[in-house]
Length: 161
Image 1 (cartoon, rainbow, N blue to C red):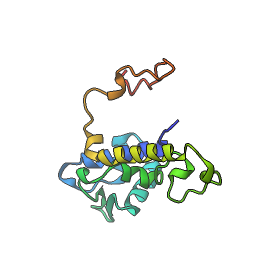
Image 2: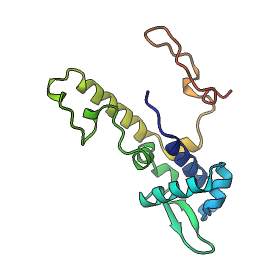
Image 3: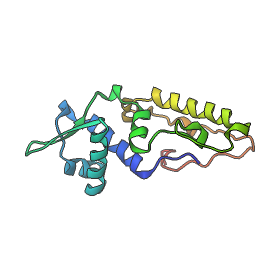
Image 4: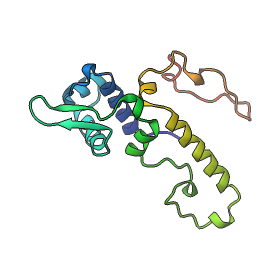
C-alpha cells in the first residue's frame, strides 16, 4: 500500500495552517501546535525540517515565529513529500539511487518506473493552495471497482463521515 507517514500528514497540516495565516505574519510554534492540535515537540521538529529545506522561514526573538517561504501556489505536493519522506519511488528501480540486482533481467521494472513517474507528475500538479482549499466533493467518494470487483476500502474521514 502506498501511504504517507503521519509526520508527513502533520507537516502538511502545518504548511496549510501557515498558508492560511493572515498577512503572512510570523506564527510562534506554540500557536501552530494549538491551532493544529498537534503536540508542540512534533510541531517544532517538523518546522525545523521544513525550514531547513526551504519551505518555511523562521525568525527568532519576541516577535519571531514561522511563515511560508513562498506563496502556497509555488509549493508543490512533490516538494512537501520530498522534504518529509524523501523522493517518491514505488520500487527500488524507480529511485535515482536505486540498485536492484535483478534489474537487468526484470520484465516489470519499466512499468513500475512509468507508474512512479505518473505519480510524480500528479504530485507536481498539486500545489499547497490546492491542499488548503480542496474541492467540496472528495474524488474517491465515487465507487471505484478494482478488477477483482471489490470496492476499495476508504477511511471514513476521507469519505466525510
